[in-house]
Length: 338
Image (cartoon, rainbow, N blue to C red):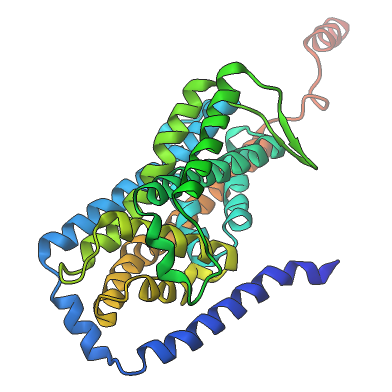
């Protein structure tokens, strides 16, 4: 029914409104000047490191599409893949409902390269699964190394986990690798079917998925001050929780959700410093890529329109073969006239 298409946008807006309401109570004692002071206190080399971490994250995101196309055994120029992936994630991270918004961009781009709608659907699902695999792997590792991290979120999330949970998550990843290695039959859960990729592709998934998340978390880590900083593993764990909650909530850009989870997960740090670090994250990971992606889309659509116009013009200029007399007919007509 028509109302179904409004469900997730409404859920996202509700999540944003609720998070902003909670943030208001968390940050009502802060001022914009304090946030600006915290931003100006970030050393120049930390800004550079955050920018480099952004490049790592978006480079890994491009790897999602490369791996999916390897799985499909489709050849597309690496530059096209990289630009398409960058544009897809820059938009979906800001718009929310990333699976659906990303699918629209990928369908428009990859069908122009000869992929069918079904193949684009598989590509989108494969990229989403690679992200989920990386999240499960990193979450398992964080819980094994720092099992007490979930205690930081007892006030806002019904999360109870331990090192045992971490080992279980790592066991799921190992089972997936084993299924690929031994060539298990597709795993079917209802209408969902998981085709085990070839082992070299699985190896790439286990590198690219975690690398993207590590790069994104590093943006925040490098922007945080040293005072009260619990270390990268804790920041990574908090990022995994916040990013996952933001995706589940379908809040556009995780607005309010990221801030709330990070402020809760870093109680020993000054809220204004945490907020400043998240401003840096939004600037590098969301806002700048979003602006660039809009120009990329405009350029792509203009080039597609120009190509269509040239093809139409070329078609109009070609003579109609049905209206042209055949050479044999011309010859017979000429001999008759003589």
